[in-house]
Image (cartoon, rainbow, N blue to C red; front, top):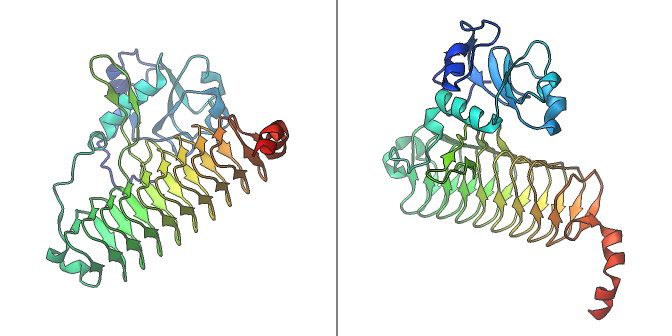
Amino acid sequence: MKNPFFKNYGPFKINEILNDLKLNNINNLENDLIKDVKDLQSAEINDLTFFHSKKYHPQASKTKASFCITLNSLKHYLPNSCNPICVDNVLLAISQITSKFYPDSINDDFDNSVKKIEELDIYSDIKYGYNVLVGENVQIGNNCLIGHNSIIEKNVKIGSNCSIGSNVIIRNSIIDDNVRILDNCVIGKKGFGFFPNKQNNQRYPHIGIVFVGENSEIGCGATIDRGSMSNTSIGKNTYLDNQIHIAHNIKIGDNCIIAGQVGLAGSTSLGNSVIIGGQAGISGHLKIGSNVQIGGGSGVIKDIPDNSKVMGYPSKDLRQFLKENKWYMKLQ
């Protein structure tokens, strides 16, 4: 699937990529072209992907990519159709390659293409407040409301019957029908991905988008980062309370309810009908099943199977938590 918002400056010859990484050619493939950079699951023939952790070996074994940046210790998981390119630091190497294909994705400076919405005749049927700005490549459906001082920056699609609050900033996002985004939200900015360096930290490109499913609500002051390689997605009829942070590559299912001040670290997935209490923290690269309930203030540091109830730090089965804290309950 073609990237909907960021321009792909490829294809590039594999030999050129290897030279950038200061690597020798592999299997005399200098004339082979790499068309795109994608994650393990979405990559196709003539694409390049990356594989940096054994946790993702099921996806690696099924990838359709022609080339994969990986570690020497992981290359045996790849199918025969995928040529391994072994490096010492997978994430740093894929960052350099992604920057070559998508240089426009690195910085998130303010959008100087925006114009006042009243100057754009194509939005004449939208109700809006004062000082609303709209950028290039923006589509807004029928019967939408946009509050005061909001900025719909470039590369945004908003469905019909949506309500956007005041002081909201949206970019690089697709918002489905009947979505409510309350005041002071920031949606679609780059995530917190970089490589520490004492002289100058190196930013990781974010070429993904944010997708918000129909009938969902995003509470005041929420921030939702766009994906780095894959997308960040919020399912249908999912409600987020105020001051929630959703990091890059998060996948949240349908009919979820997440209370205030919850933080979800990058690349974690939530199933359907998940309920999370206020101020809980979810670590990155985890899989939270469907119909899971997580108590307020909990710290989740490992996967949770379907139909579980957990609480505490580190989170544990709710019955076990209550049993271990019986003395505290009596004091209360």
